[in-house]
Image 1 (tube, helix red, strand yellow):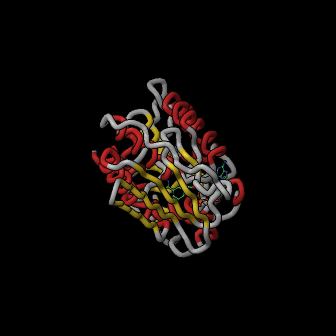
Image 2 (image 1 turned 180 degrees about the vertical axis):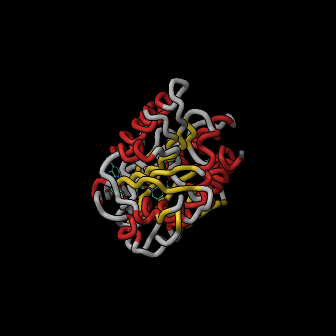
Image 3 (image 1 turned 120 degrees about the horizontal axis):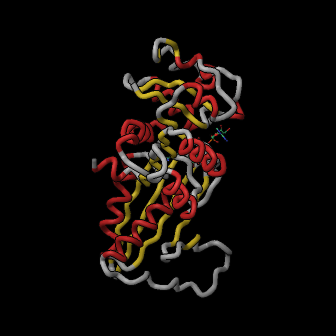
Length: 280
Ligand code: NAD
């Protein structure tokens, strides 16, 4: 039985993770942390729907939500899952690395510098490992792999990411991860940089979206009614190829999260993205 703690248990993703862990027979939810909901019963946060599931001999839904990471230490957590905000996740991951707790982080908004720090924290000097993925949906992971495959064969590529109106960071971590992989695949195939943006006059500032260092333009849409969606558009003379992925419910992320929870102990150091877990 893997003992699991969840950072951000009172949030949209964290609550969904709590419910998913509680329904997995090989996982035990032993701690839930969220300063905004500290002192509340997990039962109330989950709406009472899944709390009858017994976990380690007691209803995990009876857990009181704790204010800070020390609750994970007291509960003897093996793996901590983090769906919070980038500033909090940095601290939570540091805590995990220092307390020999494996970490699975789905929080977005990390910079390349953050990933370098995480690689150091979860390096040979730590007994804990970490999996950090901007998108835990298996469909999104496969979309990124397909984008990588197509990248060397087209002259231009742009990404449109579409999310619900409560998303705090833009562009999405998935779009940035996709752009990085497209650029790496082009470079590995000996393709030069993308052509410079031909726009001479941006009549409305931001109309061309943001451009990554490698020149992939990323456009962010925020609308009520959306969950998490992304299109990758490739173009060359006379043809375009569009791939689209839609997560229509947060449960779509749970198979990937549980895969990482079960696999993180076997993947030494820092693993970025779901790919190597899918290939394993
Ligand atoms: P949310 O705002 O609903 O939940 C975040 C929760 O974190 C809040 O309840 C907040 O109180 C809590 N929190 C803040 N600081 C904390 C701390 N120090 N310790 C513990 N909890 C803390 O947000 P959400 O929609 O659940 O998304 C959370 C993150 O997950 C975002 O970065 C989002 O972009 C990302 N996300 C990732 C994936 C993926 O597949 N990787 C999928 C969806 C969302």
